[in-house]
Figure (cartoon, rainbow over the protein chains, first blue to last red):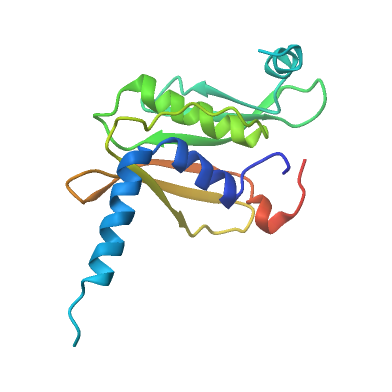
Length: 40
Length: 131
């Protein structure tokens, strides 16, 4: 790493500003939506 | 806290932040451009969510500045808030400028703009190692 900002650092800042439990809940919800999507 | 941690914390930082004296919801990002030199403004962080507590906004800036200084100790701001932060990199008129818009996604499922970070320097990913 070096001084200054990078995409990786921005992602880490977002992670620190996010509720980990809520993020897991969201991701689980997205996976459930994908697996339960009706077939065309 | 280990002795080395204390030295790291008290060492002079390359990047610091200050409350913007003319804008209550804005913080200036300053950088020491040369050894023993004065700090110069290189950007700003402006809070767009007028309902956000000032102390929370300041913690977000502290985390960003810590990361810019290559520090690993971040403040866990998100626990218990029921929100998720994400970002969008907006286009700028120069590759030497950065503009990041932060959003907050809550339980209602709608993202709202939280803050905008503008820097007069590019991202490391594109510039390589920059000091």
